Amino acid sequence: MSRNGTGRPGTGTTDVVVVGAGHSGLAMSAWLSAHSVEHVVLERGEIANSWRHERWDSLRLLTPNWQTRLPDYRYEGDDPDGFMGSADVAQFISRYAGFIGATVRTGTAVRSVSRHGDAFHVGTEQRGWRCRAVVMANGAHGIAQVPALAVKLPAAVCSMSAKDYRNPGRLDDAGVLIVGASATGLQLADEIAASGREVTLAVGEHIRMPRSYRGRDIQWWLTAAGILDQRFDQVDDLVRARRVPSPQLVGAPRSLDLNSLTMRGVRTVGRLVGLEGNIAQFSGALRSECAMADLKLARMLESFDALAVSNSFELAGTPERFAATRVDDTPQLTVDLAKQRIGTVIWATGFRPDYSWLQERVFDQKGRLRHHGGFVAPGLYALGLNFMRRRKSSFIHGAEDDVRDLGSHLVGWLKESPAARAAARMEMRAGI
Ligand SMILES: Cc1cc2nc3c(=O)[nH]c(=O)nc-3n(C[C@H](O)[C@H](O)[C@H](O)COP(=O)(O)OP(=O)(O)OC[C@H]3O[C@@H](n4cnc5c(N)ncnc54)[C@H](O)[C@@H]3O)c2cc1C
Image (cartoon, rainbow, N blue to C red; front, side, top):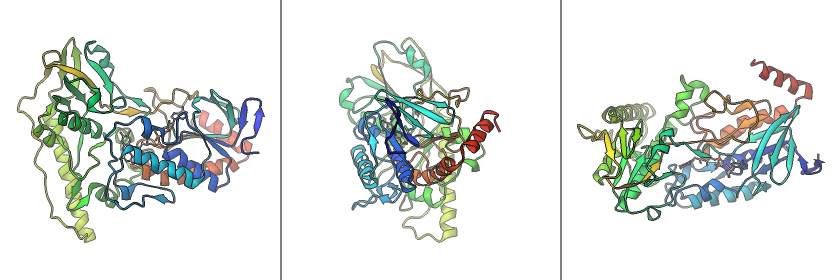
């Protein structure tokens, strides 16, 4: 088969189509090239598109530079403890594409993927592709998850997702309500409050985490404790584990938590539960949500201290516990958006992947992709999803292990006889 040989006019033929040229798709491309598997990478925008066009201006990775690596490729600058900004990440990924000699068809959005017998047909606006396997590396954050009640916001209030936010200068001078207090919500609250605007932060379940502990970055601890390597088939409640919010971290040598924000003047309220006219209603569970996050943090630090003892780690600092999150005795349950001059609501309520182009019955009742550690169906694979095979799956350094696992399976699948592949499809249809 020639590299981009054509089967019929307007249709290319190849063994594997990889959808997306973020770090995941490129890492898979490197694996396939190393195993002499003919493939194309189709990218709707540019290489590292999401880092170029879908992040706010000040964003920095939560993972330190020493942790930012891809197969056979790592950060080699002089600031291993620093945190890359989005432009640095885009450059890092683009350099990786050059390093592996990836052939990427940019400006090529995949519009459809459907199975036809032993093959898949991948539709784009330019040309179609016929292939034997598809790797969906189109990212875990394609769509901002905005709660349904957002439609009830008064017309005078600007509604935007964290994907649309760029910097405080693009907001009007009025107050801002940020919904969601994970990494994104906290960072935006911090930046917008620093710009002089009044910020109200709606806080639901969250993970409190210091930037460093006993002289080591928290990512060092999470790695040392084996938490990031925890596998999808080792947890009791995988659905829940995949929905755990991102930890309250910022890519800087400082901690960012609700206490530091309230000291800055940010007002915290409970989870947003209703909107009636100008009145936003909040859950009364703010105190218990914060108490739970404090408790989980204390437990995590206890486990780190025990790990330090059992491994005789040489650490700069001694065990430490952080002040409890300070919450008003009676947090506000309603806010009048008009009276409080709230002009913008920012939804920092998470993301989900966009598979609107996938014409296969591989979704559950809630529309989520059904997969077993990235295996979706015979010949169909996903990459880069939250806790897909390991807790680190959606991180840049998580691609290495996941690509090795799925890539070896894929190479084996391509070598199987057509009869064996047909049997695998039959089994899958029968739910075996
Ligand atoms: C706010 C934020 C902060 C993050 N912070 C960190 C961090 O600190 N450290 C870390 O390691 N990770 C971080 N991540 C997570 C992580 O790096 C991302 O999940 C990563 O972008 C996923 O990589 P990916 O290659 O799987 O997908 P992406 O980087 O999203 O790449 C997917 C590519 O597919 C393309 N695409 C999508 N749909 C189509 C289509 N239909 N046809 C063709 N191409 C398509 C996109 O244009 C894009 O280029 C963060 C993510 C977000 C959103």
